[in-house]
Image 1 (spheres, rainbow, N blue to C red):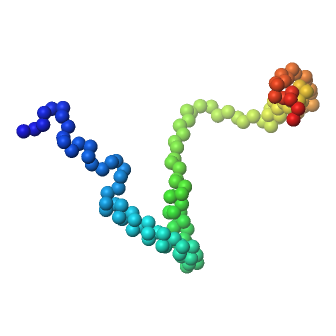
Image 2 (image 1 turned 90 degrees about the horizontal axis):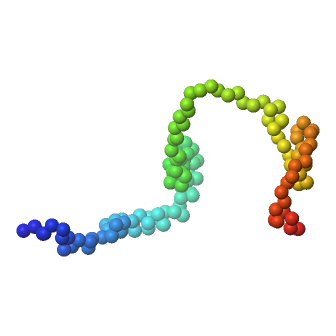
Image 3 (image 1 turned 45 degrees about the vertical axis):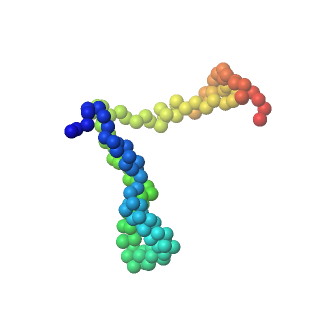
Length: 129
């Protein structure tokens, strides 16, 4: 006879927790960890030999290993609405818009003209350094 509707099975929630390793997975991981720990000191010498014998192969290995450290960026698609193309401003136009403000409120322009403006002084600016 089936369990009444709305009840849970008696062993509900007694399994492994999410993300925990099973016995086989844990043992395989330990074997691989041991192999890497024993082989790691030999890697520089192996790399030098590979680079000497097959430089192209060394670059391929390097590119494959680099993916683990610096993942590749995904491509982004840019959609631009068609329209008129603006001409970039000329250098003369750019220079005419540059203003340099001195500490005393004097504005100097590239064309040599100068104006005085009211520059607000904050408390932080008035304290001696």
